[in-house]
Image 1 (cartoon, helix red, strand yellow):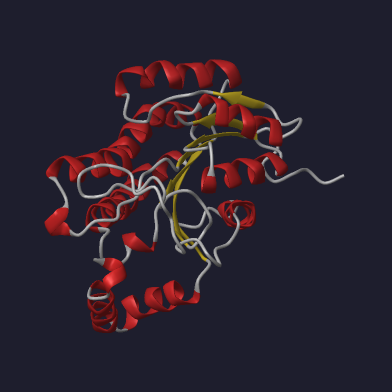
Image 2 (cartoon, one colour):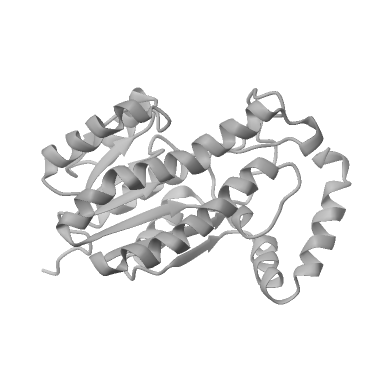
Amino acid sequence: MSTKPYQDQVVWITGASSGVGEGLAEAFAEAGARVVLSARREAELLRVREKLGTADVLVLPMDVTDYGSLPDKVATVHQHFGHIDMLVCNAGIGQRSRVEDTSMETFRRLLEVDFFAVVEHVQAVFPIMREQRSGHIVVTSSVAGKFGIPAHSGYCAAKHALHGFCDTLRAEVAEYNIAVSTLIIAAIKSNVYEHALTGDGSELGNAGKAMEGGMDALSAGRTMVKRLARKDAEINVVAHWRASVALWQQRLRPSAVYRRMAKIAQTPAWR
């Protein structure tokens, strides 16, 4: 009988209570991983754990911006399993507000959760992976990390920052046999729009038609897990042809993307 690709590997996933994080947790469990589930909502984490069946799962509730508790969280995972093979920095929040309507407090919140929290977690786990001389750091980004999208300025800024951070980190940790992968995703079903911040920092609360036609999170998770086994630097899982076209245009004809985004920004739905 063949061994599953992640048999007995310890995979720690933040933002694991729903959406992409939940899909990744299911897919990693199917692949034999021992999974650590982290998010703020313990009840939802327990629900996800039940879905994983007989997989070896540690539920570790946490707020990714509670940096003071992070050393204890890392120690808990390390003591429980003895090693940490993969850190998946997936927790994040979205945005739906134009620049002119967005408070600085909201911009700071977006950068805190979507960028600085990732840096904090990477720095906290890195010493363990360096000692092991192995590891894999995975960061969930978006097509918003490749080009600007109207009403997502702070979110785009955080995701662009993640790409620069991951590219530099990848070069610096290669000598320790640590891989770094960035997930570039779009149109995967989740509650990211419902919890997206508006200009005053309140949640949008209504996804509207944003998730219609999107890929279900488990299918996306299985695709990502399969490609993560190859330790690719960037992994595209884009479930809508328009986003795929925009990614290619950004490489070949960026001016076409800028014109398209300017047209979108003028439509009533994006104001």
